[in-house]
Length: 424
Ligand code: PLP
Image 1 (cartoon, rainbow, N blue to C red):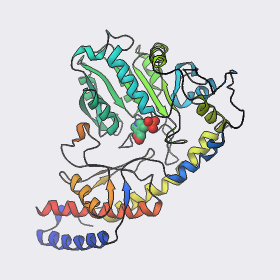
Image 2 (image 1 turned 90 degrees about the vertical axis):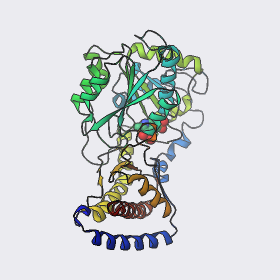
Image 3 (image 1 turned 180 degrees about the vertical axis):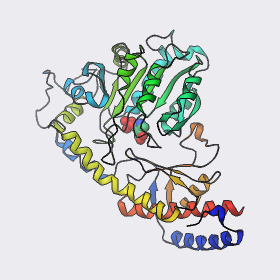
């Protein structure tokens, strides 16, 4: 297809009329599709159905001989910490297992930091006046929402294929008001980037104005490959320790998209001093986590290679949905200059970039055809994308047939919005 920018106003007007007709046809189909959130599909949850029968009748003793039904065990079961030690890149003694949501652990760490401070700091962050977090953009809306709800100013830093733009990061962290940074280091949400070794090392070792600066290292997609290509992320805890900054990373992960999104396990891993700090705080909050769920996971994933096999089954369900979207975009939009999109190697999202000023129009047009998309702007702090051009597509939850239909809608709405914009 010829780029829209090379087409005469008459040709563009003629194409617009055709696109509007196709839009009317799609609208008439009464679709009801949802591509808003990166939720696992029911078939993915079915892969872990076996968990529901575990740990089984009278199987409630941990390997340490503790009764998992009772209070206590604030750090989590040793057998589970061992099982996920490789994923977290930390020895089991530097890991804590929480309940189902890593986002909740991130929230809690942020609140403990605000109310009580962190090791190596001068006291509660909330007593220091205005504080700031660096936010690689595009990024994860729930990270931004945490900052917003606690009044932490967000500073954008651009993403590159190797992770955040380190020149910008190193420049901004010299400001002592910058206390932290959000990082999704592998298969980033939403751009799918995996941080290069050099990026991880620079983040781990950079000079910061705040002595108690923390990387909120949200490794949500550590296991979520979509292809045979498996990048190996540099271990941030090791890099930070080697750079003399062992307390810098707070590492988070969960099994939300491994086992059950609403009933998985969440993890916190950090230096010994950070872990003591975390456990001291969490020990006030709770008398102990759900250890039966931990035991259930330990039993379910006990066999050698069980975790890899489970992730391979997820990949088989997810990869065709991602391909359906990118193939459809390619078929309708290649060469038009109306969009650019990622072909992710892992994670849960495709990033779609449309011409400046068109993203909200695409969402509006898609809604008109019965397709709910993530709101334009959600990938930016405060929900504001100054260029109104970034969209996040989440193909995991709908069925393959629905994803195919949704991708047709997105391609058409993108072309329609881009054509309208050129005529305007
Ligand atoms: N972190 C990232 C980057 C995510 O994309 C998501 C979910 O989409 C989460 C965290 C949520 O994790 P959890 O279910 O463990 O709270």
